[in-house]
Length: 471
Image (cartoon, rainbow, N blue to C red):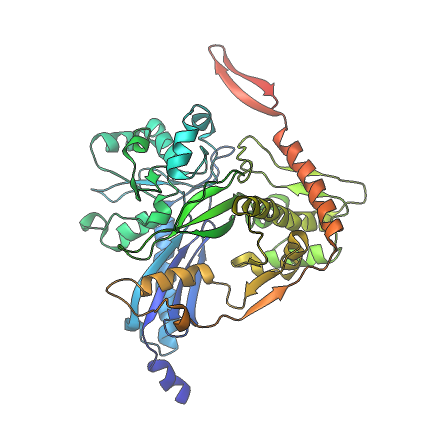
């Protein structure tokens, strides 16, 4: 009875919608202690209409949010927690994924084009304004970002083109779609985003903090960010300059250097769904741990090209170093190493851009539950990896920002008021020479993936023909 009474007396609660590439979650936190009180998760289906295309159903994304909210509230009620104490909801989402919908009917005009999608590669190759664009946006020309996806939709989907001409089209990343629907949709829904999502569209000037008229005229991942403070640092080593946060209309923006890995957690799904060598992510860790080495096998999962620091959309996945002895356990270990090597590449670039070597890496997200991966990451980086005991830091951050917003103010972001987060530290366990040797072999495999011959269809007046090209 005492525990029940304690639950009833909880202070203000803050929730977060965490809409990711492969799943949606709704989480509720105690704003005084940062304790995660309840959550629910629903997986999202992806479709692959053509090679390199990745789409999701906007209605399924929205329905998954409703389901997660309903189930979480049911769980809170069962815990005797009053859901009316939820004072704000933050949103964290898969950035760059692009949606267009009809503001009069509320209907999506096409599937959401996921950030991983490669259909805009030919559009990207036709643009020559890289220097101007990167100065304004902090971004290179890439299939990754929203503007080129929007251009494709306008050029290739009749419903989108007609809606644009008649001024009925609404464009946004996933956060905009969800907020518009949750605040009324066609009956007065709020069409908005924040500066962090806007800065990933290639339409937003990160210096003026406004949509850029000149730019608007042509109109399951691993991400490493390093806070660079109130001034944007332009990268000389293939990283993005992005907006980290801006907590209030009158508060200054803080910037970050970011490296993006296209395929990290998604490699687990590929091994499970495409190769069938594992049945779950837990099996991957056991399989890899059973051998403790890749036995000279290296895996570059460039299924959607290579992102930072290469920005090479034509790169393709490659597995090399195979022998007759190689088995699925070695491949599982190589897949985990691939995530770590990609992180190492980004960390090296950040150290060069900032001039200040990082002394430890703080991690979060679903893959941090894999202890072997965490130890591998420390070994390959040659620095400690720190994992918080409560890994939902992305959702927690969104909830904290929502709870601290003007007019809500139930969550203090003053350092002295923040709850201390317990964590686990993974120290490097191999010598630097071995780490450097393995990393150098990985880099050779990356070069092979970027020089892989590709066969592409070419249409001409006599029908479809094929030619083989190489970089």
